[in-house]
Amino acid sequence: MPSSATLALFSTAVLLLLLAPGPNMAFVLIHGARYGWRGAIHIALGIGAADIVLTLLIAAGLGLFFLHSPLAQSCVRLMGAAYLFYLAWRAWTPARLAAAETVPLLAARALWGRAFLNSLLNPKAVLFFALFLPQFVAAGRAPAATQLVVLGIWLTMLSVLFHALLGMAGSLMCKWIAPGGHGRPAIARLTAAILAMLGCICLLR
Image (tube, rainbow, N blue to C red; front, side, top):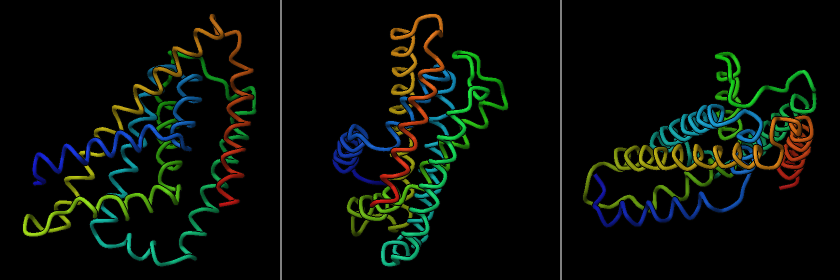
């Protein structure tokens, strides 16, 4: 187990990184605004699941392959951009609109899956895990893979809590800006525009 000092420093670094604007933050805010607090929780859990998968990949040593393979990075970047464009198309379709605070089981699973793929197909997320987690592995303690898994699980818990609260903030903001749901179509169009813009940024990097 990491020492208490290492865990405190790690937690502070994670929170600072979570507060930095990025694709996940935009994704959570706009989807929280559209689907309400229940949707925000499913989105946060989807991102957490992606964090667990990335943690296991890094602990297994696959992060080094990605880190030193430009081809792998390009493939993930293209897949991530394609998925963002797909989400933008779905958001633009009026029939896709969902009522806030009412997320059926199927819609909840879809939100979880979207958040999971959006986070997993983000090359910056893979690089973040590959470069960030190993810095907090202490020599002479538990095996490095074990420490990486413990740190990754702790990061995931912080990430789920942060993104759930962020999505709820987006839901409250939506209610304040467009009470009664009258502005939901406009929010859907804004969602599509932001997702398409994120897809373009992903292609250009």
